[in-house]
Structure formats: C-alpha cells, structure tokens
Image 1 (spheres, rainbow, N blue to C red):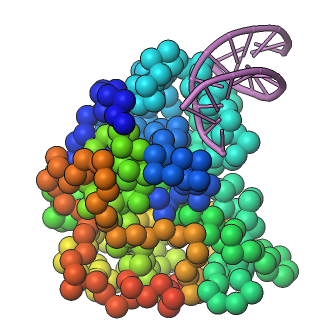
Image 2 (image 1 turned 90 degrees about the vertical axis):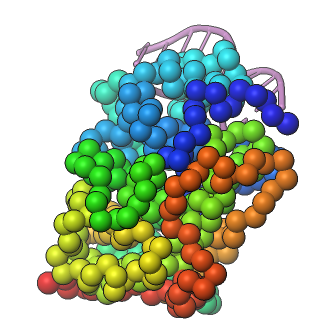
Length: 360
DNA sequence: GTCGGAAGGA
DNA sequence: TCCTTCCGAC
C-alpha cells in the first residue's frame, strides 16, 4: 500500500542508491516482524541522505572525522524523515530520540560538544563488539580476521561472524561514501568511464534492501540493477585486494583521486574482473579500514572460506508491487553480465586475503 | 541541546 | 522491534 508521501522531497535521481543489505548488520534486516513490508530504518535513511549530494546542505559527513556527520538543518531532516514515514508531526526532538535509541545499539553515538553531530559507530561495531582477530567457526566455512593483539585468538560463533561481516561491509561502504564525498570535492574521477549521475566513483553497493525490502512505497527510486551490484561486487572482493594491499594505504585510506595510482598497486586492469568493473571499486576501502581499526602494522588479516550464513547476496528479482527500479536510472554502475562473472566472484569459498605481518 | 524513561502503535 | 510521542531533568 502506498502511503503517497514517501518520495516527496527526496527525488529519485540516478544518484540514489540503496545501500547493500549485505553491508549492514543483520539485525537491521530482520524481517520477521513484517515480512516483505519492512520499513526503512532511521539510520538507513540518514545514510541515504548523507549519500546524496542534494541533501548536503541538510546533513553531511564531517570532514576529517570518519563516520561523523552533522545535521545542518535538523528541522529539514526531521521533515524528510516524517515524510518518509508518513509522520507529518515529526520533528527533530522526536527524530533525535530515535537516534538516541541507537546509542545502546552502538549504531551511533553522540559527538559531545558538537551540536547536531553524531557518529556512526563503525569501529565499535567491529573492534569492541567483536575483538575478532580470529573469527573461526568450528568447521569450515570460517572467517579468520587477523591475529589477536595479545595471546590467543578469540573464537566467534557463526552468528557473530555473519554480523561481523555485515559490519565490515557496512564499514566498507560507509568509508567509501565518505572518501567519495571528499574526493568529489576534489573533482570527479576522469578515467573511470563512469557516467555523470552515478554520484560516486565508488562502486555502489547495490542493495538487497531494495524498495521491496522496505515496503512497496518507501524508496526514493532504486534501480534493481543497482540492487544487484553488491551481489556482484562482493564476490569480486578477492581480485580487489592484492596480497600486498595493506601497503597501499595507511591506517585510513586517504582520499585518492583515481588518477593517483596507489604506490605499489598493480594496475587496475590487472585486478578488475572485467571491463564493466568500475575503477571506483578499486578504491573501495573496506578492508584497509580494518587495517586502520586494528592494532597497527604487526597485524595479519585473513579471510578464509568466507561464506557467512547470514550474508544475503541475491540476484535481482522483480518483486510484486514495486516500481521497476531501473526506471529513471539511466546511469550504469557495475553490473556483471552473464558471461562476465569471473571465476573468483562466484567462489566465496576460496576467498582469501592475507595481510602481511611485516609490511615493507 | 541533550538525555533517557515511559507508554504506546504498527 | 523500531520507532513515535511525551516529558522531566540536566
């Protein structure tokens, strides 16, 4: 059922993309309460606004503070949120109450002393919740993430692995978004071949959280093709991370321009699986972020047989009651064609990323 | 402005 | 479960 007030004020543009369901903690996608009609969550909405250039005057990432964002116009954000949720009485007081509920969930925390400034809790999601350094299931598949800072690795159950992976990927995305935003201020990438309107050189994480996951009337416009792009992206992770990738960045990836080759990095075309693979994906900083979140240069990161059960990687499917999300989305992001899938992309089982213990 | 308890709705 | 609404306290 359409509520009729959802897209208003938030135009569907080619720059609108849903964030990959894969990229969020799985508790964000529990659909048991209302299967098939799940409403958007506030933090999704916040991220969505942050993702869109047209709302930069309303809400924006805080430069220099990863994950931190400023609500520049609280009333407008509340109004947009109210429209999305068909709650015309929404105001910042109520919205902020909802945001405060995220504190306990560790999705957000408040940046004290800064008005209307919050921070996504990427690091805590990964480091504090899951002092991962080794994440291993009793049997394969398992996920090994780095060496423990001290002593023995911690065992993490599969359910946590799943969430961990989600958090990681979420972090990847968010970092990419921020870096992209910074990069955008420096000028658009030239060599990507990406069309204008695909607002980021970052390979957009398509979303299994398509409009239908959020209910039939609650999207700004989402190309289903985009929805699949993470599904295609995710398995393509391995070629994105050469064995020496940790040498390519510091604790956090600086906002590199696409013309600025990463020192020591192989050429893109040696890494990317096919011509349609956006070079932006190369800049996708996810795992290097973990490097930054970790303990320093003595770490090892490995992803072995990565196939968490909770990971949703689905091909795009048409859903009843949903607009064809491709409409209004002429721009193209990465979309693997049938014969284009590389062997590794379909083989998560063999995903392995090694973080050298002693980077040069 | 910010916080968090409480009640209630979907 | 995730807000929405209200409210008192700081």
